[in-house]
Length: 326
Image (cartoon, rainbow, N blue to C red; front, side):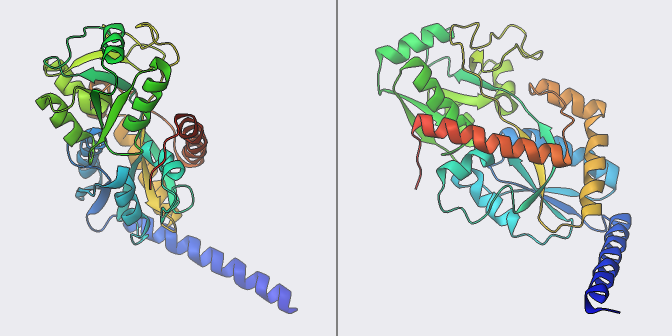
């Protein structure tokens, strides 16, 4: 045989052996607990979806699915750790829209959300909502809040889940559209930001419904508008920003599961199937509706394509808002 033919045969054999090995791994997977790295502090929007999903997967797989919160730098600390995890099918990463924003704001990231991960499936996509502390802000409507902010330039702080998150960019976009001057206060996740908002340490947060739905229902926070093209079924009386007098203000976050690159394809596919099964259970559907999200059906290449589109979309927003981070 010619050397070129021998090489071709060897490559074919190796590919077949690799595929068989991957399939064998998937058939025995999981043999031990699985870890979901959540790159924000406990109690935030990512947690609101990751923890119910982990509980459902526990039941389906017969193995524990553990949540590991690794907060910092707008979710990039956890993302960096996840990108370096062993690609053995036992570590996954719960990424978010924040990770499509990060490439435009952090010049020295040591990972690439598009190249260092495999997009498994989109998990949830709740819209952002403008929420205020009712004891610190008298405004009952979005128009009243905008007027209040204009009357107090530079005096109002808004909290976020961290620099470079959707909360941050939602606040900057709000400032652009309303021509107001609010000061940004970054936290290590939506959970701590919500705690300070409820405590009155910051008057407003441009939050995802995943972490603010509970406090809104409890009367701890006042929701002024949802940044979505239509009202959310879970909060039918809450107007959209356009209905409240701020057309063009539409911001939603999303959460998705990723695997470190080189994770065996058969395991990735098996996890995608388990996610699809979990998302159709009454418990997950009810939890998602309660948190203002639909149950998306976007996985694999379609999810990867969405992530790429989001990276480009947020690059344009970051440029327009002139947001830069060290």
